[in-house]
Length: 89
Image 1 (cartoon, helix red, strand yellow):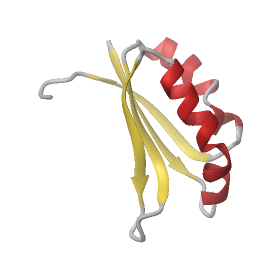
Image 2 (cartoon, one colour):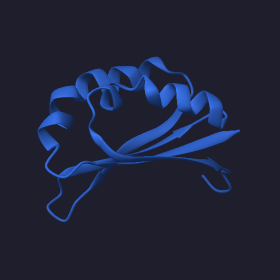
Image 3 (cartoon, one colour):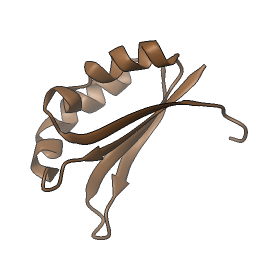
Image 4 (spheres, one colour):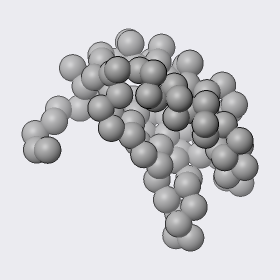
C-alpha cells in the first residue's frame, strides 16, 4: 500500500524549513519506503509545503510523519495522509 503525505507550511515559516532541510532530506534518504518527494512552491517559487509518496500503510505513515524533522520543528500548518494507488509512472 502507498500513502501520500500532503503537508502545508505555516505562513512565514520558510526559515524554519531552510534550517531543518538537511535533516529532513537525510531522513527521506534513510527511509527506503520513500518513493518520491519534493516541495510545493508558492507564486514566488519559494518552498511552502511537501508532497511525499511512501510505500507503507497509513499506520506506518503516521509514525514516519511524526518522526520527520520538519514535523519535530513544527513547520507544518497541516498534514494529510491519504492512501494512494499508483496507476501511471
